[in-house]
Length: 71
Image (cartoon, rainbow, N blue to C red; front, side, top):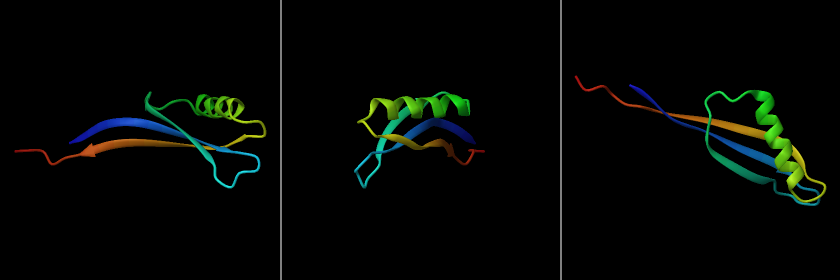
């Protein structure tokens, strides 16, 4: 049996003068969010970050649990 657990997004932001990316996580996202909306969220988060920041990417993770059915 497959049970959907949830969808998560991780926005990865490049920061000027920094080696490491800033990562912002969102839990319990709606199923199958439109790509344009996901990109827009990433752009908004980059705009809210320190000056010189830019959106690198957004990682979407969909988790499911698969269990053996009891007979």
